[in-house]
Length: 343
Length: 294
Image (cartoon, rainbow over all chains, first blue to last red; front, side, top):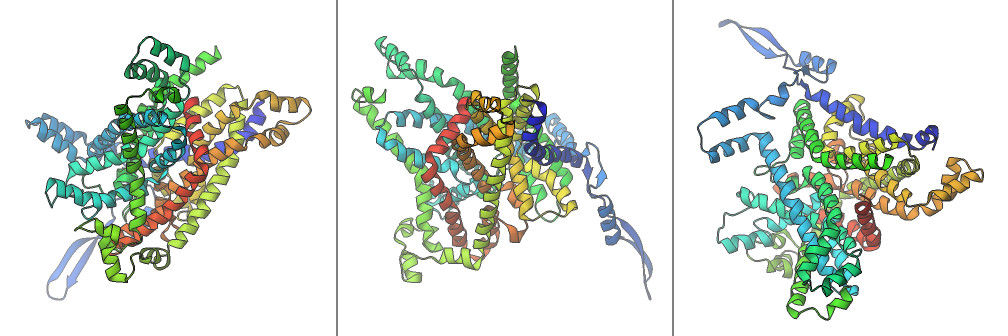
């Protein structure tokens, strides 16, 4: 296809992506280097008839607004935002590591730093939910594959629901069931015989609830992909494995799993990518006291009255770096395939 | 293969398989059924500390309203709290996002599938990286410029942003779909004297609908399910359903009208139910096509 035709076809799409994906990324980087203006202070002399005169400092609201209008980005701060307490917190981290506290205390202190608290939850969510959801999906796929054909349609219908549901709505539905007055929350209190056990009070319960939500909503994707993969397992290989005396488990272990391996890497990469941006469940479960994620930190900086663009920008840049690190294996593989094809 | 093996399966294994599937179906479906059922009760039943049987029989609902079912939550959400406006905005946003993304995506995906040049590969790689960006990081880049340009808070801005965020996925999906349509088809049309665009319009367009419908479903879902973009970029009166529900939560928990939020959640779930009901086959094929071509 000639260059001209190619660009005629792809230009609208390209413009949209450049304007609304590439430029915002650049804009985020720029924003992260600035912080809000300091308020302009003026000295006001305050004279009273008998008390004499005092001078005090007051905020000059008009001048502050003027400055804000002239330079909406704020003042240049370099990489300062990246290393302050709300982000990488290098100074605090150094102090904690070099202190002579026990390991548990050190960890607790690090978990008090907002960025690390979010990072640790985000990574835990990624690397716990992804494998568990894949195992669940694989198990469902194997089970459904063993059922009579007529049952498959309805089972797939109900299985798709947790995946297709709006993340915020899905997490709200589970949150209501798990709240102390909901069916599951009340049952949990009953089982442990502890009237104070609730999502709000127990960080452990909150983490478990979020991880369970993650597996619930991610499992169906693995199921659908693995189920489709199971239909392509070569019958001959299975049959010869049976003739050689392989048990059911051995057939799964040595025939089916190797056959599905390429699909499994694909599923793992897609889900890691999606789980890294975990955000809505934290809003839905009102979990911010016990668990936050990187995306939630950005949302928190941006919402509310005082929007902290610099802080949100710095967290965004750090998040993007995380995404690129996660993507490295995919990019490397695609590049190798492309080179291979070109040669 | 399953039919051959089925009759030789030991009973214990059969029990395990059926038990597991029943357990999964309960996990997958009961939260929805429970919430739909509970949305027609009063708060004292759906959030009952004493016994969850209250939610099933509606003990307090009967006491308070005289009937075992009540539409009070729906009335509160749709009429008193203007949820209809949010629903209307959602229709506008999702329809526009789906139509515009598909128009741009089919043209771009077709070009990528038919071009052997190196830059086509790089565009696909860039799209892959863009696809992985958390939406909220992009939002933090939009906000300040949008405030400056004074286009914050209105529906068209959100629509364009969602279309752009959706482009990487749409391009990949349609790119692999167009690869599966034989090249000879449009090339023979061009030998017969068509231009590239005429070949696309007369030869490719009639056969591309299955792929477009599948991709369209996922574009629809992206627009419908989005929270990060619409919550940050829309003003209160222009909110779509999902941010509206989240704004319900704060204001309603104080006044004791949690059932408004429950009713709103159920209302927003219904279209997704219908979507899966009618397009199950396309959704499954879309998920697996992406996976197999990866």
